[in-house]
Length: 148
Image 1: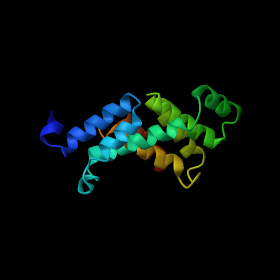
Image 2: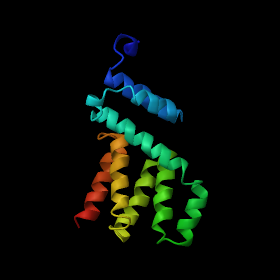
Image 3: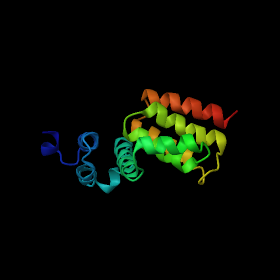
């Protein structure tokens, strides 16, 4: 109803796109987000949905969680497998374990993949929102690693 009255309502568009993401309808989410006027693309709600779309697309390319877990168990220094595992865990809604996997990479080799693990964490935090419990806890843990 809101979009019928105001087809450029940012909160309604972001909310609709987010609901599409939650059902796995990534293409519909992208189409909905495309309706956001260019001048409003930096709105926090729009950026959060875009981050969630990007993460969902990444997760589609990484493979099954159990295979990634086996790779990490066989070689704990395989940062790409750990990174992919974090992406898959996040897509499955396991934010805590996804955060832990990326923090482990940051601990072991912060500069790996041009600071890729930290950047991925920031993208997770953006998608989850600033007040999400996993974001708050993850930011604290990342700060401890970076500043200790």
